Image (cartoon, rainbow, N blue to C red; front, side):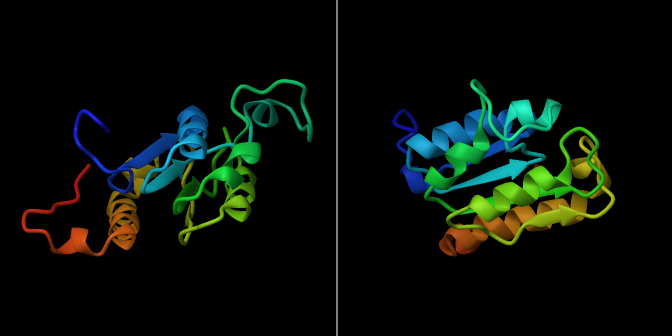
Length: 145
């Protein structure tokens, strides 16, 4: 952020699946404008095993997300067979500043961006623009993937 002369509120973090761990970790320690979590898990261990408490878990989003102070958009497929939708719903309940979640009906773990492209882009744009309405009005502002 320093090299690019960005203010923390101008940074939006994105974490998908295993990438949700580092995203939540960073957002729990540093100020950012917002985070987007797609197909995120409550914890790595809880994806593999049906447990409530563990001695060690490298990415325990369920413990770190309550520390995140920025707006959070959660995106999750209703038919995700890798990280069940329940993980996304549990994370949503823990957000201090939740944005309207995007539960993608019929989506699996790896097809949200391709099979639901238009709605996906619209929901991302809505989230980004909700963070700072001025971003909508800047000439040349385009939202694209």
